[in-house]
Image 1 (cartoon, rainbow, N blue to C red):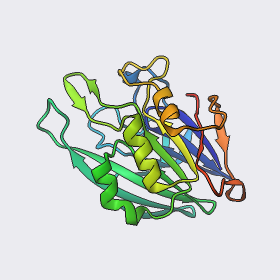
Image 2: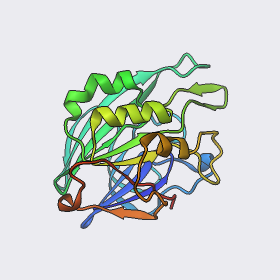
Image 3: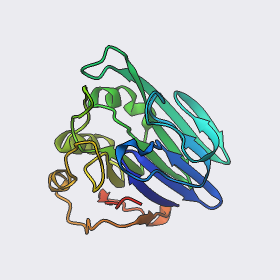
Length: 219
């Protein structure tokens, strides 16, 4: 299994001939969205703004439920929140994805109380994608999101074998987020956290007694 990051909460997961894209975005955030064919696209937002499927999409999933596509098992757990500055509730979805015998969990912008509510349903997690950039503004809206300290606390609860930070400041991004360094310091990681273009994971090679931090550069 190979994982690539495009910035924000957007990842591409490739396993054999199957490609999964999580949380694609439009060009309004200043980054390059994924291109090409995707067999499965998971939309974590409500699709009301730039959280749209911009790839050549196969199956598009956008919320709560259990799904199986090409042997990939997917569970969606949705919740609603109201950003400061708007009275309109927004939907967000946490996904778990089982690929090659490994369970991935994508937290989107879930806060601790939302994660606590589904912790047992999430179960054992091999690879956790967690936001670390903190509360920020999009226009007049204040979007609350995990900062470094809160993200580390959730990593401690979920105890994944691999954690990949997301939703943090990268070159070109037009949204003001914190960088990833505070999260890395708070994790106290002794691993090499030099950003890599992509990561290849095999179940037999996953760490057994520790959580490995993998920092991805944007594609």
